[in-house]
Amino acid sequence: MKRIVTLPGDGIGPEITASALKVLEAASQHVDFKFEVEEHTIGGAAIDQDGHPFPDATKKACQAADAILLGAVGGPKWEQAERTPEAGLLEMRQTLELFANLRPVEMHDYLLKDSPLKEEIVKGTDFVMVRELTGGIYFGRPKYFDEEEAVDTLHYNRGEIERIVRLAFDLAKTRKNKVTLVDKANVLASSQLWRKVATQIAQEEYPEVEFEWMYVDNAAMQIITNPTAYDVIVTENMFGDILSDEASVITGSLGMLPSASLSQTNASLYEPIHGSAPDIAGKDIANPMSMILSVTMMLRQSFEEFEMADRIEHACAAVMDRGMRTADLGGDTSHSTFTRAVIDEINKGASS
Ligand SMILES: NC(=O)c1ccc[n+]([C@@H]2O[C@H](COP(=O)([O-])OP(=O)(O)OC[C@H]3O[C@@H](n4cnc5c(N)ncnc54)[C@H](O)[C@@H]3O)[C@@H](O)[C@H]2O)c1
Figure 1 (cartoon, rainbow, N blue to C red):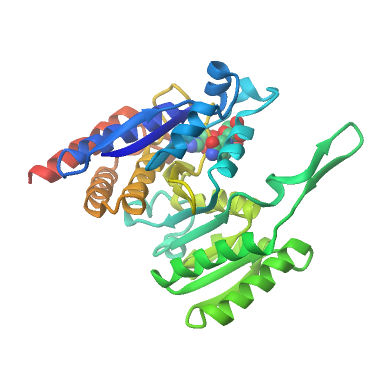
Figure 2: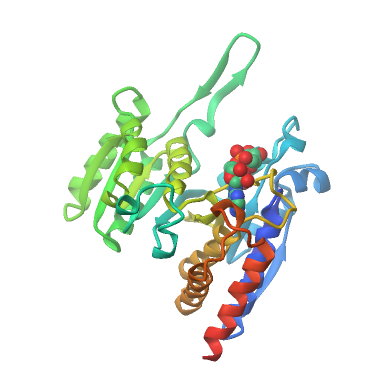
């Protein structure tokens, strides 16, 4: 029996988490996969209920889980909170040592017409952004601001860089054998260390893998104008955060992209790359795909349930092929109708 801890969080988080669990439940009916779900609070919901955005009970449950599914956190209600929902998210990443965030950007044929970019540019796009998740400017100290001055600190040590760069190279060996490091080594000291360490690892440990580096400003342009040129892109925390949101434009919507966060000491966590989308929360219009695809990443990465993951993805593709689209992709299919259609496809696939 696998123990899945769910952290629905805020905004559209609870809706898309419930939707993804229904899809998982439907897919599990057709195979021998047994799981139990334990729901806990995080973010604003946890502030309201427990007085802390990453409560102890949530921490303990995550530490005992086989996999964790997170919706999203944050919203205007908690912007002035002493401890914000986002601070809880960062604390969770650090506590669970979720150092590697994998964000696949894959252009399925059914999405070709949804991309605002030209079909000949995006067709065939298939890369993974490997974002360092527990270091860099989001965590560095000192960090403060007052009326006259503000300070953030961008810090990395060799060990933090080595483990994520090796993970990127190992991943590339299972894919198209190419790693692109994105940095700003012409200006930032931390990037100089990234460049030095990554180049050493490339030459000494992975000579068979193609390696290149790019400045982040150039990468911001190249990812959009030439997305098929990439296989594995490895980068530090903030660059990865920004570039992966930008990369979502390729597939037409933030609501399409899942992610996996890996740890060497705890269970992996799966979540959409987007936030809590408070502007559309509770309206039954959110795109559930980012969360459903996060579940397929969980099935493959944490449980090696490849058949189930394939079954869910085929069902999603069939629904998209029929032209069903949520509002973010210009359609009028509601969140609940889309989810129902995916479940019907799963059941149809199983009985045919
Ligand atoms: N991992 C996380 O939990 C996470 C990540 C980013 C931002 N946030 C938080 O989320 C809150 C909102 O931030 P934001 O508005 O800048 O970013 P956001 O990603 O929540 O939303 C950006 C835009 O994309 C749309 N969108 C996002 N997901 C969608 C989906 N599944 N279907 C349809 N449309 C979708 C939203 O409606 C919005 O217009 C903030 O409090 C922010 O701090 C949380």
